[in-house]
Every structure is written in structure tokens, then in C-alpha cells.
Length: 460
Image 1 (cartoon, rainbow, N blue to C red):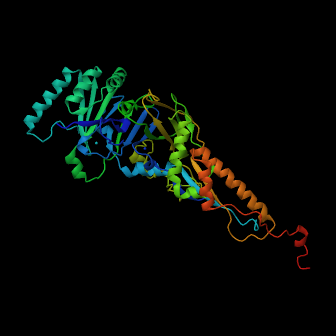
Image 2 (image 1 turned 180 degrees about the horizontal axis):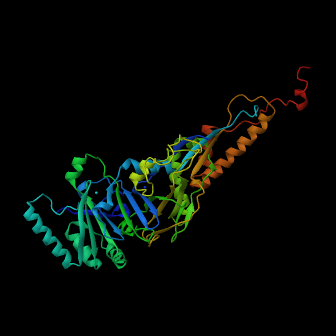
Image 3 (image 1 turned 90 degrees about the horizontal axis):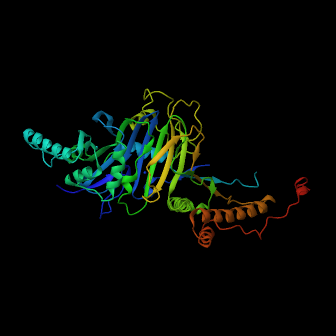
């Protein structure tokens, strides 16, 4: 049996020992979506009361037969609690919530996935015999196979265990490469009476599906614990992990309770040349913000009522899309107002969904605990938004032009300082780029000094 890479959620990152298998997340100009960040994971979490749906996506790029995922879950999960979702939904949600770039133009101042037990399909009698053998071996190690089923292209096993050594041994005997460091983490989840959702790819089902990529898995359950397990994903990770969590609730912003949640810098004016380098800018700005927090942290990038957006990086998700994603409190896909066009406030706001986008950069040392959350009841809107302001470049012949040009040059100086502070880039380098792009006004050549009274009797 081939050895599989054990990944965890929400790790979502394959904990491969020696491979680079990736982890599984004015005028609108551009967005900074999750594609900017390598080895990132995306999780949408729908929560109301104790009811929870988690939809997980990964950008795993390796061989499908080597993919496996282990997720600690609070209860035994049955087949009808699992759903394979449309990957386009998370992509849409990512685009809708992404940090964005907007631009303004000055006016003329003079104008004012069933767990696969066998590599081949054997005769029913043989399968039953091997299944019994497998279960007996599991029982001998203190592992219980609570359920097994196939959903979409995934074979899924639900396990419970009495102790971590037995679970780790069983997983290894079944071909999973489990890092030695995982034992302690597995043990902590067992002490919490958590179960383990184990998914791997059913190659035949995947071939029938025809999908090029592994589709997201959605799991529904009830638990009083509002949390997301991330520690298994850090067990063998060599680098920092980026996790994007999209919280959809009825009650406003969501924050972490055991780590400080801070808002990403927003509303800053930056030089116009950044328009063509927004991705590089955002990655540098995020890294700088994280460095100032010790290299890691939980950052709120977007918090907004799903009814609208301004400016829109993508349209809000429809009720039908939200239900498919796992928003369970919408009674009917046809309820609520029609999707509004981009930009502007809707006349009616009936969609009872509020989304919070959290970007978490973490490793095992800085994040020794799983993420725990709370809803705050705060429905104020927030977005990571950056502004380009273009100077008027037409002919300016009035007296106000001189003052305007001076103001623009001062604005350019401020933008250089702001960009350097946000990204850590050198001011001299930024200034060089600004001079090559927009440059500065030559204020030594001022407009004719028309006195104010000359306008009164201009015909004299």
C-alpha cells in the first residue's frame, strides 16, 4: 500500500516529511485574493447557535492517491452530514471579501470526499473478511471505526480512539505518514473526546467526476465549542501557514478569543504606480503587519453585510449559493432580494448573513492552541481598502493651479512615506518609481499671477 501524506485541516496542509506538497485561503481596480499566498488554506464556517457547517478547500497539487486529510470533529459524523461542494463558491467568496484597490481622479482645480479499504475491488466475501480483519486490528489498538462511506471523490472514515499511540500506529499501518510529533496533538484531541474525520481520494470516483481539482468538503455538526482545529497542520510544517477563514453568521463580526484579532491597515493613499503591482504591495504590507506582531497573527481583512458591497470586488453571493456553501438558516433559495448590481446600497436588506474574513498566519510555536471564536454583535462594515489618487494632468491656467500643484507634490511625499511604512520598502526606491511614473509638478513655473480683481473687470 502506498504511503499517504497525512494532512489535517484545518491544517489543510499536507504534513509531508520530505515533499513540497502544498497546503490545501472611488473605482474598484484590483483585489488581493488568496492566490497571492502559497500553501494557503480556505475554510468557510457557518455558525448559528451550536449548529455549524465547515466547508474546506485545499490547493493540493500532488498525486491524488497520496492525498489524505484528518480533521478532528466533535461528534461522530454520518454520511448525510457530509457534502461535496462547488469549488467556485469558495472562489467567489474569496473574491467578494478580498482586500481591494480603488482609484480616484482629481478634478481640474480651475473648474472647482468513502475510505478505501482495498486497492482493488474484491469479491464481496473477501471484502467482508478483510473489513473484519481491519476492524479487529483497529480494536486491538483501541481505535474504533465509527462509520465509513464515500461522498463524491472522497472515501471517508470516522474514527475514535482511546489513546494516541494506538491511533498513530493504526494510521501508519494503513499507509499514512504520520509525523512523530503528531502523537501529542492527537492525544490532546482524544482527551477532549473528539473524533477524527479521515478523507482520502477514491480514484475511480474522481475519474467519474472528471474534476481536475479536489472539490471542497462540507461537514455539518452541532457543538457548543466555536473553534477551528489547526494544530495538526503545524506538526510537521517547515514554514508559516496562511489560513483564510470566512465566518458567516447572523450576528456580525467574529473575532478569535484566545489570540488577538486586529484589523489590517486600511484607507491609506499610496502612489499610483502600485496599481500594476497591487499583489506585491499587499503581500509586503501583510508581512510587515505580521512582523510587527511577532511574524504571526489574526487579521480581519473584511467584515460586511452580505446584502451589498462598496466597492465590490465581486457581487455578493446569492441565497442559492449561500445555501450550497452551507448557510443553513436561509429558508428558501428564492428568499430575499434579487442580487443588486455592483456598487451602491440596496433598497432592501433582507439577507440575514454577515461575513467576516480572517487571515491567520501561524506556526506551531506562535499558535499552540486551536482557534477559538466569538461573535461580537458588531455589524459595522470593514474592508481592507487602498486608494490611488491621480492628479489632474490637463492644462491649468488659473491662480489656484499653483496651490493645487504644491498640494499634489506634498501628497506624493506623504504617499511615499505611507507606502514605505506599510511595506518596509525603501523610500529612495519608492521615490525613484514615483518620479518615473507620475513625477512631481514643477512649481517654479507658476501660472500667471492674476489678481482676484482682474476677474471682475476682465473686459477692460
